[in-house]
Image 1 (cartoon, rainbow, N blue to C red):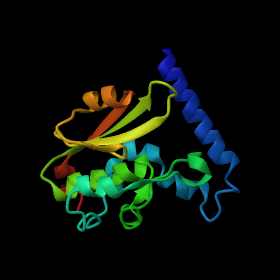
Image 2: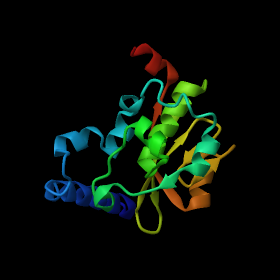
Image 3: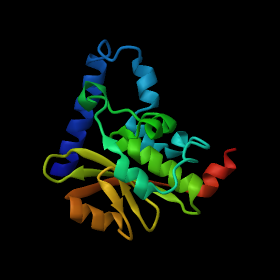
Image 4: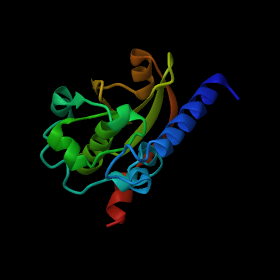
Length: 176
């Protein structure tokens, strides 16, 4: 097993164990409720995070991105969850998974493009990061990258790609 995959699996194990151990600290949420909003579900089941009408008030993602303020999940992100899209838009803050859910909704609901969500890892410390790409733009809590592929974004920001999932506009239309 290569070193990057080992670090990734160790981080996943730590996050899961931490979530179970800290269930009492999470407060009003049960572990089951948190697992339905888990950042891992965003990668594997992105269609679950499409919220019809949530992005109606966003004129352009570049403007939204400029005003978006990064903030950690409770317990300093020990258990990473995705906030509801309308809540993230209203607060204009969250972490990379919250931002990615907004970008995913924006691309699918407000443009004529499909969206691919990418899971990345910092080369230096295996920190996980989510971005969305629509074939033309890379949407990241770190900034809006016009005419940039995810590979170019990774070189600019020092990431490696772990995995991705494409959500087709037609898939979302057909589930209604």
